[in-house]
Length: 252
Ligand SMILES: NC(=O)c1ccc[n+]([C@@H]2O[C@H](COP(=O)([O-])OP(=O)(O)OC[C@H]3O[C@@H](n4cnc5c(N)ncnc54)[C@H](OP(=O)(O)O)[C@@H]3O)[C@@H](O)[C@H]2O)c1
Image (cartoon, rainbow, N blue to C red; front, side, top):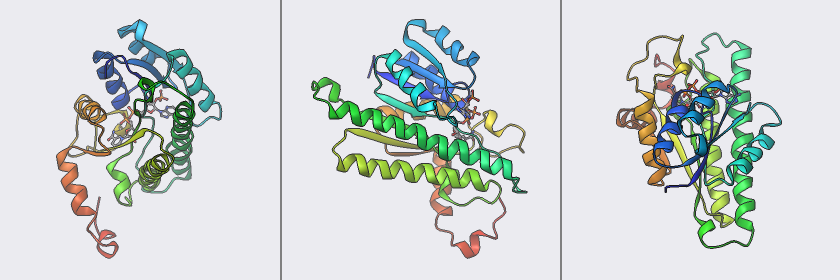
């Protein structure tokens, strides 16, 4: 997969930053985006000839156009990787926290994944050589939080469920339109990044470098859904079996 082109939105920290670093070591050309420019420039410094930088705020209406400008600068895109997201515990249901989460994880996500999908749909609707019909990939980090309604973080949990369903829906639509787009839904458990800072100590915390390695392997193996790691695969398998009448009693 050397020399392929990936755009990573949400590359300025945490899991997205680590995935960007790893793809660079594997020879990919990257377009990296987020709101903060400084960390994106750090990525560019690692391989100046292979990294393009663009500031994008996915909650803003110009985000789609800025993504297309980034793809132009990169000279195309084979993989769109969506790592942007926010999340916060909100046990008192502060409205601002809920609405900002929806704005970023639902509206921003839909805007950007939709833009990437439309880019690939246009690309594959044009007469083209066999080589450039190589399968495109849309990958996004959702979360295990989307597999059940979680009381401590209602908007986070609900928007992560939306993201997972959206990817599944697009996969069906793309298949029926004969678009060679592969979809990957990545669902990590707790990862030691800025997203969790300020809350309480989390159990079964994973390092972002380890999660990034699993993600890059999942991209290469064209997995569809990847829960990271095995402990969370086990956990989510069982908690999905719990009926609502019992679930509401469980303290998280
Ligand atoms: N950490 C965990 O335990 C965990 C578990 C499961 C899933 N996830 C998911 O993994 C993804 C990455 O999170 P992380 O843990 O790596 O946290 P992080 O270090 O806080 O990274 C979040 C990324 O999202 C970007 N972002 C936030 N708002 C944005 C906006 N409006 N426009 C563009 N980019 C924006 C941030 O960049 P800027 O601030 O520079 O814009 C940053 O690059 C999120 O979707 C998160 O829900 C995390």
